[in-house]
Length: 314
Image 1 (tube, rainbow, N blue to C red):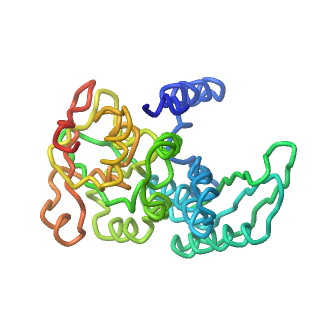
Image 2: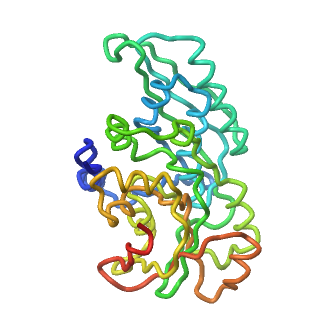
């Protein structure tokens, strides 16, 4: 059982993005967010959901953190382009509105907005019994931020360094496979639904103190470490992982219980890195590791394929 067997085809998703670009006549669609300029100001917007992590929350009857996930998935994307989140809106659809569940979800969204320093501006609650079975629901979020300083990504060069900020766990992608694994195995449910980390404070500090050295940010979601870092690279560029970091136990469980290859794990999950940062090759590496607690990962190379010794991790 791998991610595709569980019903999710990442390659087909990439093909759909290409179709959208053709329809709209632009290559700018497909980034972490969309940038809009108005009267000399730059705004950045991002939208996302939390996937089938919702179903896991439903099964264990705990809904108080899934709203944090929803905010995180949107605002972390805004950070990748240099944006500061301003406000957030949610879309909550279900077969039947249950006030106790709805209250927990909105409290989580409100907490996520507090962590991100943005305002919960409004949203839409849609009760649709013809679409959703009893107990089933879906969440989507939309956030807008402002770009007050530099826009990312900047031009990335061969030899530039890759660092990471740790994830809090699985975050909010890859759960279709996890549901399949839970049919025949068990894992700590509290660990599985741990909310996605919001990186606003860390990124704002790095931008303030290391702005000229930063080339770009990559939010590690669907597509894993490899797919998301490559989204901010130029043609002919790729990543070489030269360092080793501790992979959280939950990813070892997924690898051992599924038919995922080591390579597929890096192309699907965050594997312990929630946000990747590319910095100039001449930056003070020791300072990033010691003072900012960043995880050294590797560097940018000129290659058609990534270079990773997967055996070091799994």
